[in-house]
Length: 525
Image 1: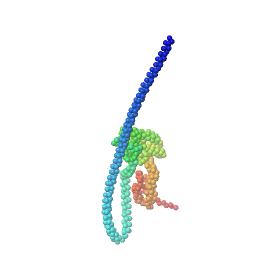
Image 2: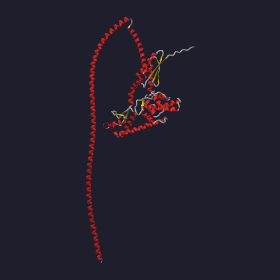
Image 3: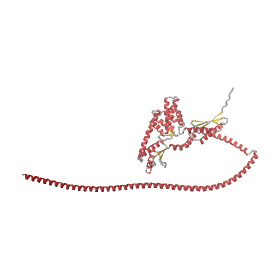
Image 4: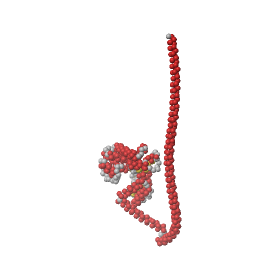
């Protein structure tokens, strides 16, 4: 029994040992297989990584080549544009050179012709000198004969003849002047219109240039191309939508907006500003922006009008008149802002009516008429009526008081004054327009013009004093009675007025009045 147990134990130990050895063998074999698989997988990963790297490298090289080709194309375009510009510049230079050559040839031809003419003139001059000498000789002989016949020297006869001709000429001239003056008085209206037309012609160019353009500044000249658009479609759309001419020339970073209507110019300016800031410039966008700007300006006009009437304390004004008052902000007359002029006139009318003690109702009507007296200058539609009559018509249409309507229509004497406020409006309008500095004239130039007027009159013989009144619109000349006759007074007035017209620049007209007065004073003792 003991032996069996021992044998069993030995067999068991042998079996355990064999199991352990077998297990170690199998584990080692399995481990070696896994190591081999891991090495194969590592090799595979290395190959994949190498392939991916090659692919990425080829891709980057391809992208670099494409970028290089793009840059090359852009550079070639820039070079082409610059080459075209240089070619155009060379063509312009060649044209200018050709023009200069043609002008040089023309000048040379003219010089040759002038040389020939000079030679001919010299010949004629020599011939004339010879004839002149002969005539002088004959004249001396004739003078000696006349002196023998008349028993007078040549100088004495000449003096008598000159004096007689001077008296005759003076008499004829004064008669002619009197005739002209009488004729002018008979046709005063016709002559006045001629004077007004001549004044308009003298100053129209400067005023038009100054008040009909607006300069729009740009950040760079590149924007000009966008504003013009393809084949000029953008600029045509903008001009059609606003009614303003756009002048795009070589002036750097600037576009000129030209139009007689300042409201249209303001709409065009704001629209162009919005388009440039937005960057989207095409016909459809232009029309949209212009419409929005027009609505904005319209709202602004109404706001200005409402603020003005509230400021002046005027109530119950028709909305159309309020709108016209707002439009005055964008109008000017002789450089004077129309709204500021109307507000100033309204305040002056109110003060003058109050000082005259006309009552609160009349004061309000006067202020109302003062504000509205120039609404005929801002009509929505053009008409043949003057601004005074048109303003009266508009005020009547909007239900204004008859006194206000009459004051508006009569402030330039185009209607008969039927109410007490009418002359007040006329006087205050003249005060606002004639005060120093009101109409584009600084104080120094105004005072200098007044002094020049007075000095011009004082320079004449027989003038004692001269005073410029009515803001330089009238000149009073006081003469010495013992040196200047009544006939001389007429002549002096004409000569001073003629000299003012030829030598001085002034707005409107200057009335010259010569005053001759003789006082004989004695004291009884």
